Image 1 (tube, one colour):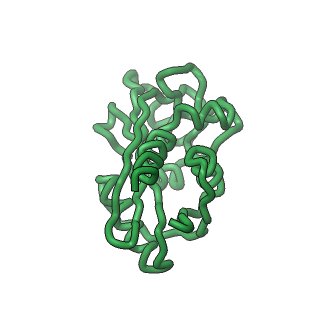
Image 2 (cartoon, one colour):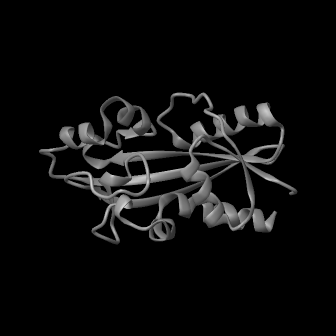
Amino acid sequence: MEQLYFVTSNEGKIKEAEMILGIPIKPIRADLEEIQSLELEEIVKAKARKAFELIQKPLFVDDVGFYIEAWNGFPGPFIKHLCDAVGNEGLLKMMKNEINRKIIVKAAIGFHNGKEVVTFIGEVKGTLAGESRGQGGWGWDPIFIPSHTDKTYAELTVEEKNAVSHRREALEIFKKYLQQA
């Protein structure tokens, strides 16, 4: 494959993917319309198909889910919409009196090779912080504490986060797939 394209509008994701994959990727900055689904895998498959219609080149897209155990997995893939509506502080306020703060975060990569879409899922277990902490990352990074540490994603260095993130897991599986293709 001569060139691999990553369709995203998130600069942080582009840098993270290049660091983890260890290969040059060409970013295509675009906000793709997303289908509404509780299934993260279905969302990335639809996004990859839509992106391929636009550029007609081998590409990948990603999406994330934020699954709060106390809320039966909600908001899942709707985390972006929830954070857009109430922000991290609003989410923390809604969870203020909740004892069960367990969360699973998932990253889904959808790769369109020109013939089909292949998906790769990574997940990390953790908990919801009591307050926003840290300056790094983006989105909900200041309120998610991965289970291996007591720091939020936003308190970790880029290298520390990239070593343990849900996106890293998905990208590592994707990298193995690309090496075997």
